[in-house]
Length: 413
Image: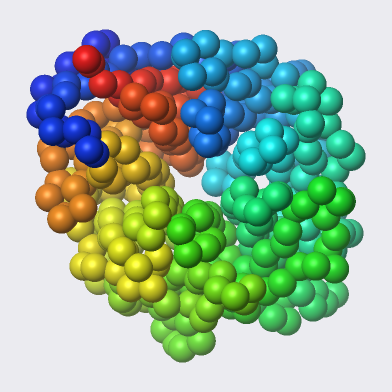
């Protein structure tokens, strides 16, 4: 199915910019992206100078894929696509995808999942940096103990201080040789943990890894942001009780230590499996905003909540979906409001990438359709980046070959 886009969809939204009382209109337009044929798993990172780093996976031949990047200048032009690495042992997955961030000094920091054994979930996180805008890359290292054939992934890279904070799910604690259980191919004597490590000017060391949370959901994405009061990370937790509660929680780095997890909202979703549907967080000053999916009490929802004390407390959530969401949320702060994207199911296997603006006081605008899509896992997670004058989208159209398409939602002066 080709996900066609309504061209030049003008939205007379009468939305005021932060610090600007004049209303603006917005245009949603299809946008070419610098990707080749048979591409998937797009991702974005917006640097502090307004440039956008895009990463994606592209098939090279029957056995090899490339992790590629391109940098979008503030004038909208794309630089030359470049390889981070080409491999035959990527762990390719619709939900756990690579990322590339730009650090404060201009270095690029990339991560990707890479197989390290024959088991279905035997893979590790590999990371490398570039000091010349992606022309060359360092040797890869792991933020965790290497060589353990267990699940490691769902990474968030947060530029911080003179380097970066790397947050990831770590299934490598106390792996035994007992028979495989239902989720993976090695028996966990302890649950999945959430870990963090620091990337600085020296090579990252697994020995500096710290535990953020000792028991978390097995395969939901993590997300991190930097508030004026320090880093925050949001993720799906996992209670010690039966039945299990798997709600979205936040932990903050305060005085060098991670605070105990606190629910963003007590959805009380009782579920005995991983929903593969992680949250997103954005911050500006001490305003922290979180968007997430829940299906508590058998009602699927996409919600967003605001904090004005750096994530210590949150207001009541605002529901943004239209009654049948698949989740797969995106979030950006722009023009003084939160923009939430998600996948809304349609008839059959169809779905739609949707977008809604939510004001700080909880007022929500009418949603718009960014593009038709698919509810299949192979459609992946639509991604959204902030531009100086709008938003940039990318999503996967599943098929053989798969295709990445893009759109911009930009202010019309």
